[in-house]
Structure formats: C-alpha cells, structure tokens
Image (cartoon, rainbow, N blue to C red; front, side, top):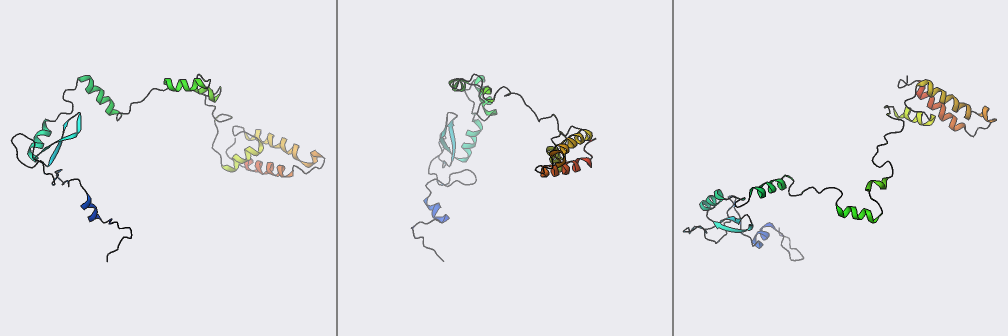
Length: 208
C-alpha cells in the first residue's frame, strides 16, 4: 500500500540515497564512486582513497589507490618540520583539549569591579565573606525529628544535658501557666506545646 504525501515530499530512505551528491564510501574507506586516478607517479589505478596533503592543509586531499595510500600513510608525520618547543607546546594544549585555563582576576574583571567601587570581589559579601560561620551552637548531634522539634519549642540546645533542659522547661511552665498569670489562659496552647516537648526529651536516650 502506497501513501501519497499531500505536500509532494518523498521521505523514504531510498529516495534520500538517490538525492545524495557525495560519493558512497565503502567499509574499507574507499570512495567507490570516485572517478579520480591515483596521484602516485606512474600509477594508473583508480584513486579511491584520500589522504590529507599536509598538517597545514588537513582539508585538502591527495587521492591514491589502496597500495599507494598505505605507503603514503606510513610516511606521514604530522609534526614534520615542527621544532621541539612547538611540539611540547602542542602536547600541553592537547592535555586540556586546547582549552587553556585562564587565571582568576584578569584585568577586565578588575576594571568591572572597580567601576562599582569594589577593590576585592569578596567585599560584596561583607566582613565574613571568606569565613565559614558553621552551624550555630557548634557541632550538632543527630536527633530524631520529634526531639529536634522539642528542642526548638523549649529554646534549648542539643549540647545541653537533660538537667539543663529540665530547668528550661520548668521556667517556661511557670511563665505560661494560668495560675502565674491571674487565670489568663491565652498561653494555654503554648503551654501544651512545652509539655509535649518535655515528654519527648525526658524519655530520650540522646541526652545524658
């Protein structure tokens, strides 16, 4: 069953091959449609194999037969006529794929910062630009989420002992209890949170 394209385009693979103007290249690397003659002196064989003319003209080719392209490739030297210094420089470029690392703080960047009145780019971050403040309260221990939440409610640090946290809990209960506030129950919800928080800490094994 054939389908007619309403736009008149034939997108089949066979049609694409017919439209190609480049020569067909075989598995051996030969351009089988080439009509050239081998450029080696005295050879009249078909020139179906190409080789670059020189390191400076890699996009320009000589055409040879199979035997003479092998001979040409055996004699090929990409660095022919290159000094030792140029050879070492090329190796250094190849190590970084010819993308050399540029030093930080080049003149263009310095001029850009100076237009903003900044001598050192780190100044835009303030006095502690190059300092790592770390976590507040020093190193923290790993705690379950409920115990971590309980500490936040009590306003305690995880480095405190259970006795210290209990003192904090008692002081909060005194401040929030209605009996200490003339019967005012406005802080009752907050008091319930504090009681819940202490229940998490008093049975915990994370605090000595």
